[in-house]
Length: 118
Image (cartoon, rainbow, N blue to C red; front, side, top):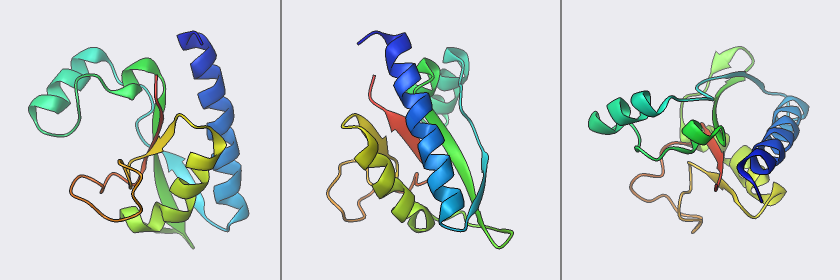
C-alpha cells in the first residue's frame, strides 16, 4: 500500500479511536500529530523520540486524555484505548505496550502515542 493509502487508513482509524474515547465518557485533545524530520532529529538527540518517527510520515498522533476535566498523563489511563486501537488494523501500535506482550516493560510509557507501521 502506498504511503498516501496508509495515511488515509490511519486517519480513518484515528477518527474511530476519538469517537470511542468520547463514547467511554472521556475527553481528549490532540498532542503532536505531524513532526518535521528536523524536529525528530532534535528529539532523538534529547532522548525524547527517534529519528525515523511515524509522526514524520503522518502515521502517528499523541492524545491528551481527560476524565471529568482532569488531565490523565499516565500510560495506564490509555490502556483501554490502546487495546482498542490495536484491534482496528494489524499495523496499529500503541506506545503503552510497544512489544505487544501485555506487560509493562521499560520504554512502554508512551501511552498517549498511537501509530500505524509504515
